[in-house]
Length: 212
Image (cartoon, rainbow, N blue to C red; front, side):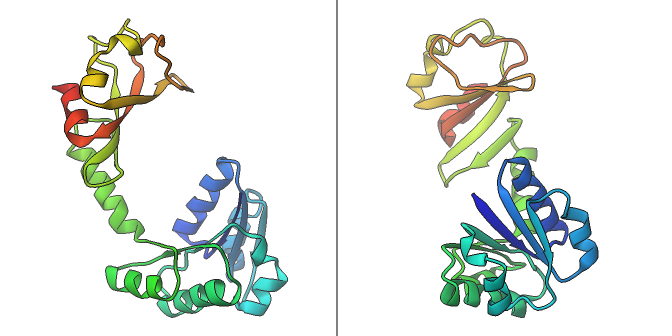
C-alpha cells in the first residue's frame, strides 16, 4: 500500500518510520528541509514542499496514494484546507487527520476526513488501560470486546490449545503466540511453552477470567 504523510513532526516522523518498517511505501512531505533530511533515507520518497496546495499535490502524484495522513497537528486552518482539497478536489479514498481536541475532530469529520486521531489523548487512554490491567497489553476493540496478551500461566504450559477447554466455555480465542522473536498462528495441537506470550480475543468479561 502507498501512504503519504503531510507534516513530519514527532508524530509524522514516527508514523513514517513505523509504516516503512511494516513494508509500506511512504511519501513524506514537509515544508521544513531539516525534517525531510531526518526521513529521506528511510522512506520511499521525501519531498520539501513550501506550498502544499492542489496543484503541487497533483504534480507529485498524490492521486496514486491509497491513504493520505495529514499530520500537521497545531495549524488547524491548514489541516482544514488540506482535508477539503484532498477529499473534494483530489478525491483521495482515505484521509486520516491529526487533531488536538474533540471540537477540531468534529469539524474535520464534517469536511470529509475519514478518520481523525488525537494522538496524545489516545496514548493516555492506552497507557491508563495498560497500567490498570493485569495483562501485558490490552486493546479495546469496542465497549465489550478486547484483544489482550498474557504470559502463559504455569497451568497452561505443556498443554495444547485444544486442551484448554475453557476457551470454548468463555467464548474466547487464542489468536497468536509470541515465542522469543517469533509470532505463531495457534493450531489446535500447538503446545504452549514456558514464557510464551498468548494473545486472546473475546468479550471483556470472559478475557478477565483468564487470570481468575
